[in-house]
Length: 285
Image (tube, rainbow, N blue to C red; front, top):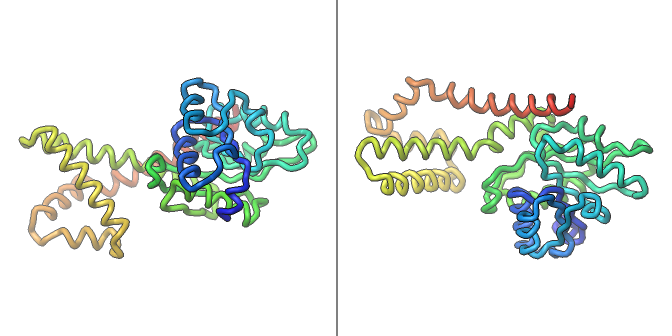
């Protein structure tokens, strides 16, 4: 399916960080830059995209006119207007592009309605939730496809996301995309917050900020690498480093006494619920 991606005309509506990450991943894998067109209203972002060698425009309609795969990379709040603008311009098209949406919370039902042409046709749509480590080619993405999406279209989308994601997971119910949002979409911020607090703890106990920062960052990186590269489950890795009555056990018991599991559960659920709420609110607008 990589060969099919090579031949595809790709359109990105929105040229922000996530679009830039995916485009960077695609071009690094040899996708022809002239097969990529980005529509972006902000000149600064357009110039960044132009510097990357892809075609740019401020017109969504112009960018999409010959696309067979369109990545919808806009803020949820403007998604409805963009979908309706494109639908009104596609009346004469004999075939519609595959839509890959990374707009958080926006449901397939809403997008099908907003993309509906006057003759009743709607494009095939896949919802995707990537995360910011995609900027380094280390992303994790969840995907859900509408019932009319073919296996070839799924494979094409997996190849697209595979350019920046090390984990690409299809879910079988749309509501699980909100769970992906709460787990991996928002997840990098949880680790950043943990490192932030580790640094502050180290400083409060006497380390310099520079020392605490270097140690905390490398600890997070090293632990993450162990998680990815080891065949052991996370629980086993934790057990391996936890000596009975040792320092790590003391710290983990403190976490447990503070309700660490509940804190994590509540955080993931809060992000999941907010994704669902966002979609429901915008569907009514």
